[in-house]
Image (cartoon, rainbow, N blue to C red; front, side, top):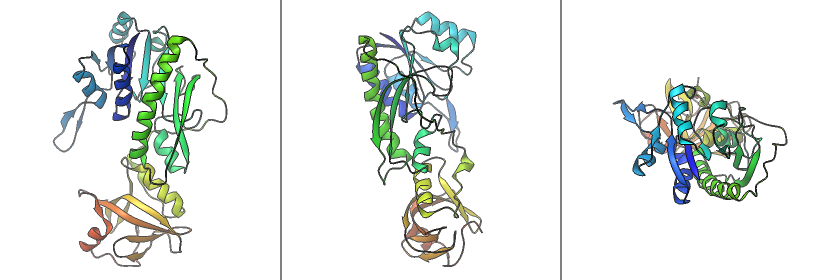
Amino acid sequence: MQIIFFGTPSFAVASLKVLLQSGDDVIAVVTQPDKRRGRDRRISFPPVKSLGIEEGIRILQPVNLREQTFLDELRSMKPDIIVVVAYGKILPLQILSLPVYGCVNVHASLLPKYRGAAPIQWAIVRGEKKTGITTMLMDEGLDTGDILLQRKTDISDDDNSYTLSKKLSETGASLLAETIRDLKKGIIKPRPQAGEPSYAPPMKKEDGRINWGNTSVEIYNFVRGMYPWPSAYCYLNRERIKITKAKALKGSGMPGRIEKTGNEIIVGTSDGLISIIELQPEGKKVMAAGEFLRGRRVKEGSFFDE
């Protein structure tokens, strides 16, 4: 089977590896353009491109998916199937209609829940205990296509977006392999999505601002869901602080008020307390709360975001 793979971040790498090991022919990788990152603004390759180069696969990085030269190039390859894993853009009809078996997407939720760009983050932020992977046949909508296969995954209390993404990446790769195999055998019957949809819009940097008026559990889930990007943050004495690890505690306090310091920083919320375990001052490394406190005068009774 001739496969063209669309994908960009680390999440998609496991799925590409599975396809490369399957015996099918991955004839091209389509990924987002390179970006400049870091203080020195060095060119950074998408992780999927790096793997594609290692494997000697043809790499395409279009800026515009509707550009005629790019569409003609895809058409000339005559793909049997296009696989899409966290590519980052919606495919136009000109691409969706190309392959014999259609375009198969690996999506990190149990559709129709959490359609959109950030299903892993929003599932944690909203306190879900289960999520999963859906493979589906793509249409022109936002994750609205018919379902092929689904597999559930537990969200543990210790999971954050990074750890859950790693789990779902491996689950997605396994389910993709099963999906491709069953499509070739003709034993999958696509089924329409059923139930009330929910949405997971893209994250923006400013979405990480902590609202200390929320409950302790909501803030705890928020910190987990926002890690590692865009990161939950707040301000202390006008300094921007990222909160990278926390836990919810019973008790009472004023929202945003520092109730206790020591090896951790205990902060009041609307219904309980949050213990800040690890944090990252702007321009500094991640550090334990105790290390942060040793370098600053932080008084009990002072407020975040005041």
